[in-house]
Amino acid sequence: MTTAPTDLSDAARALLQATTMQKVDWILADAWVHTPTTTIAFQWMAYMHRCGVVMRPPCLHLIAEGGMGKTAVLLAYTELHPVQQTPDDPLRLQRPIVYVECKPEHQGERGVRHAILKACWPSATHIRGTEEEVDSTLRAQGVRMLLLDEFGELTKAGAASHRRALSELKRLSNTARVGIVAATVTNLAHVLDVDQQFASRFKRKITISPWALSNDLRNFVYGLQRNLPFPERSQLDDRQCLPLIAQHSEGNTKEIVEVIRLAALHALEADAAHISHDSLVLAIESPTPPSVALRRVA
Image: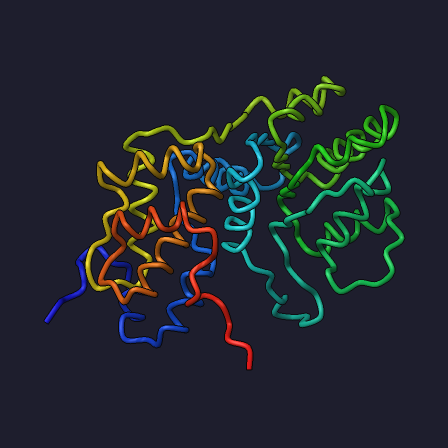
């Protein structure tokens, strides 16, 4: 009788006796795995949160190419601080951390306010985007940090709109005393430089670089595979598989996760006890997805 490997996560271990479809659903779901860089980002965000209401709240600039995990980092930190109801007023929400998805249509100061208000009131159908509305919302919900994802999108409507957007964020930082985390892709990392005074608050920069073949990559792959429901230890972090993963993914986090997901599904389809090199090769070379992951249509 095969016993579960000691390095399997508790959640994956609980699925060893599950149905194939339950295992497929689990493999296809997103799983968070910390890396050295994201750990540092979390620590700085926790520090910013701990600073509380200060005159010049600390800010952070997170820089990475697409698919390297900027959004995942921000969402994972947001989930650590869920929305809560105020004990003496069940209709009043407390939202200490606000994740804001920036879009090209969020132009100028009113667009910035609209993006923030939509994040604070996800079900709202009518948002005016006034200064008073955003100020009162941040105050009422006890917001301490704004996590601005794809921050560079706010700057694509021209120089004047760009400056107004930065000016509004600087005003909110000053008046609402909120810390700001701005996440940008590498080629838009300069967007804060338009306002030198505001940019000076973002001297703390964290860059999520593409993966190289290293122990850090081995640890990341190990963290991913230990969350997969196989009764024996998989081999994806060994000397044969790891270089193949690095080469195929070109160091992109999203591609690493996807190829491991496909390899796991191919192994599951073969009723294998672990993910082997053969399953990884199949994940890379197969022209079609694993049939086990396709819903059967009557």
